[in-house]
Amino acid sequence: MNENEVSYIIRKCIFNVYNTLGPGLLESVYQKILVYELQENDLDVKSELMLPVKYDEKLFDLSFRIDILVEDKVILELKSVKSIEDIHYKQLYTYLKLSDKKLGLLVNFNTTNILDGIKRVVNKL
Image 1 (cartoon, rainbow, N blue to C red):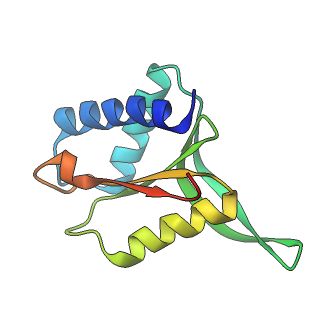
Image 2 (image 1 turned 30 degrees about the vertical axis):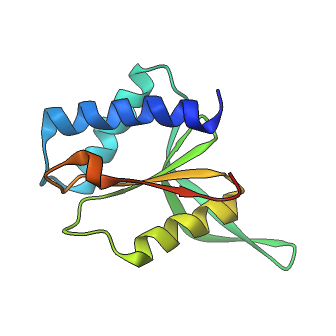
């Protein structure tokens, strides 16, 4: 599957989680349940994945963590906040660059319409 095909299944899983739980819960709740939902859809999922930083041809373990990595292709950065800020987009874009991934989804579960809460961030896609 390519990134867009994986993204389609991820979005379905996000809708299922949101429609079942609704808005207003902690990010950690959505993360745990979304990981379960993704795995139930036969996707390879890694959660709280450590992301080293490569600088000057050296790797530094600086404890950056990717919320969820799906099929080793799509990074999910989850939020449960009043509004998404520019820094959230930049954070996900930096994770994409550092990990050499092409697609990320920034997901804010604290919204009245989950369609408004899912934003695509791309890196050389």
